[in-house]
Amino acid sequence: MDQPANPDFKQRERVAARVSAAFKARGYQLVQYGGATVEQFSRGGYTTSDVDLGFIDVAPSLEVRAQVMASLGCERGTRLYLLDGVVVDLGGQAELLSSRLVEINTPEGMLLLEAPEESLVQRVLMSVYPQEDDDQKKAALILMTQALAGHLPLDWNEVDRLAALPGFKVQSVVAAYKKEAEKLISTVNRSGQT
Image 1 (cartoon, rainbow, N blue to C red):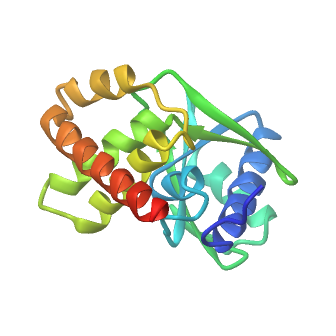
Image 2 (cartoon, one colour):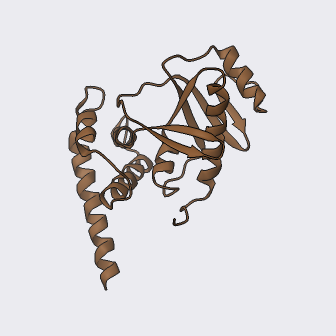
């Protein structure tokens, strides 16, 4: 297997898995979403500085969250914790719109990630709303090029479904970015053939 573009993402993966395992021992299930998930799907091609985690179904009280995080060596916090040099943004109940989750096994335990389709559509939305954001566009293009190049399984019908939901309505932006990603891949393929 090839080396990740940014090996630091493995540190964030380990931290997320440790936190997930600690909460699982208390009967709670966590899912990772946000930039760290884009980083995971791109094997470090996109970089973030924190790990966003939310709870599936039921979230524990703030007191239980603080106890679990303290058991891992974190100082008391309400939502943000520092663990092994990684900022952990520990949210409440995750608001996932796709029923599919991606499960990865790590030495620290299992880690659940939001679906790549949801991750992609979230990045697309954040690239245009509430204002243009080039970093989020970059993240969306990285996910799309990974998928179009065959390195990331992606259900384009699910992308279209999510993009059409009332909270998103970014179908035209998804289509435009997909064309841009296809051009990027075509350019890379042409330059590799010369």
